Length: 244
Image (tube, rainbow, N blue to C red; front, side, top):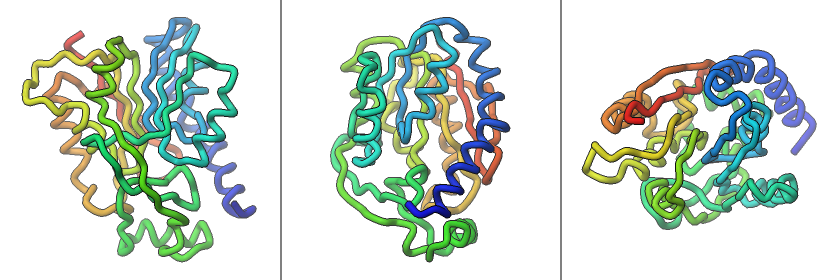
């Protein structure tokens, strides 16, 4: 990664620490301060969420999914001494199988989704990064994907937080969780936290926020918090399980 992109990542990190994470910490501290936390982290990236929740709870157990093969190797080294953090080199989607993963010049925005090359937001982002829009994707490869429903069935335990940050693929991940027709199923998850974009960077994701809200509400989850990030037109939205 060149110096320009490293600097952008640094600025984004500082911005998040000042404007975003304090608000997120205030919310979760009300529920988990000095208590053990069990987390499903879908889209681990560099471990930002794992590090965040580790500072709130008295202990943390993590099941983290990261499809980016290079980041996965770095995560294994980073958490090698943490047996309570289990890392899985797979993606999460609506169905079990294989999907093409698109690695971005900024690893935070790698995705299973197709870029919308006519998007004004994408054009601006490419200009900031110093690349052409068609050069934002630096590589694509097939990755095994699992469904959250199958994962929960295998684990048979309760989770405090399910965090999903997978760049426009959040709806597909939730469809793989709520894949049963019976809307009265009680899911063993207290909070679901999602990244919600309002831009047009990806194809076929413009109505996702409404669709996600309807899907979560139907299955017993209520929107309790929305926290805007300090940059870009996107937020974290947090839903609470009303059936617990």
